[in-house]
Image (tube, rainbow, N blue to C red; front, side, top):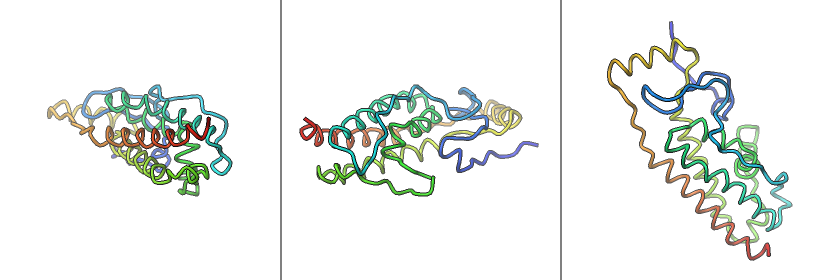
Length: 194
């Protein structure tokens, strides 16, 4: 007897060892283990300390974040939600924008340099948009806990001609908004960093 796939909070954070099907409908790839990398990895700068960061350190951190975010367009177009979730766990993003999320403190400390530059609103908007992208990826990821479950769903989709059409306007908008806010913060930091 197959059971419905109910994701755990650990899977929301990108972990877990279940079988995951990327994309919607009857097609798509199946992977085992955690979320796929989707090419969304970047070498992070030195550990980011929100309270001690200078404008130069902020620019380096923002460049690392943008490097990860730039690869997410292809993940979104492929509906590789596991790749999107993996990017959220990359040190460049997790240590700066999503620090401690789900690990006891959901509050991200705003770097003092961001406050000094007067771009706190852009910082908060970037975090919010990134959270929306993460939520969308989690909500649209298809998780199977066994091959029997997957086979039954694929057979049902094939028999009925069902193909999930995912409206990608929301994740595209969230990614664009995040990148625009990061660019605004970077522009404010660059003159100070020089």
